[in-house]
Image (cartoon, rainbow, N blue to C red; front, side, top):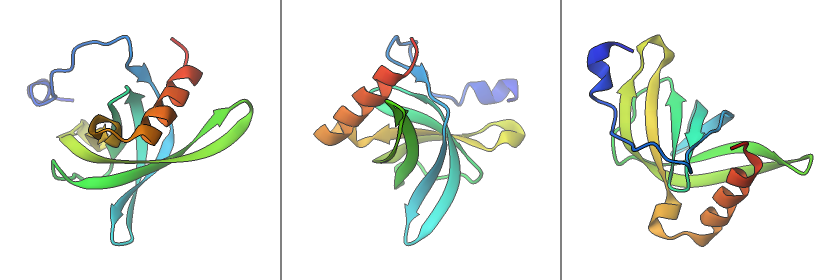
Length: 121
């Protein structure tokens, strides 16, 4: 990432509740339009993901991926919206994906808590 691009990233205070979370994922952009994505990290309120093409701030989508809990693979899907989009060199675009938990969806909160418990400190 070029030095001048660093100023474009949102200022996120370091947080004990943000954890590295790397998974392959599928981003459903609506109207049968899907994109491959990779998760980077997760907090109770949002995720950082990498995608190949830029997305507009405010765009709503759903993100699907698998997690392993007690040696079982569980498919999960989260709805959310894009809070930022920054080009990161040749890697693609880093997207801030604000989860619906920030808007009060209790089932999302339970799933996020489950994911957070499975990750190392």
